[in-house]
Length: 125
Image 1 (cartoon, rainbow, N blue to C red):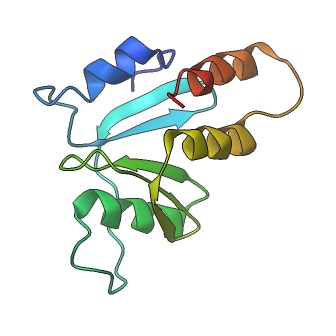
Image 2 (cartoon, helix red, strand yellow; image 1 turned 90 degrees about the vertical axis):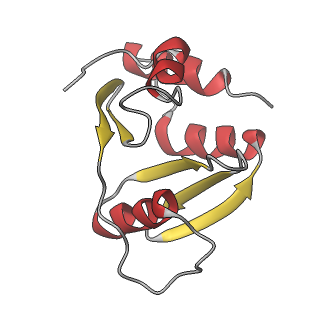
Image 3 (cartoon, rainbow, N blue to C red; image 1 turned 45 degrees about the vertical axis):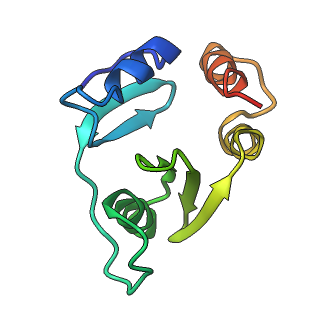
């Protein structure tokens, strides 16, 4: 368990290609990074062979939980989002920001929301 504030620098270090946590998932619970380097359940559905393990895990975990999963392709840098067992591929950073704001930033202004809002706003347009 990490229980750390999700700063840009920490997230970049977790997913740096030589990092031991690089290939696993990072789990954010509330406004804290709860864990990193996590192995997620793969979907059992028959999906496109063009999708790798990251995408299969994203679909799988969202079939079994209420998680929203952001996947960045290691090969292309393309961004996908999985929610409710459905994968939306090749979204822009602006679309990602909109999805994250809609899902995680309520209209109230408590301290946890401010942290998440800062992170979401740092996503490039």
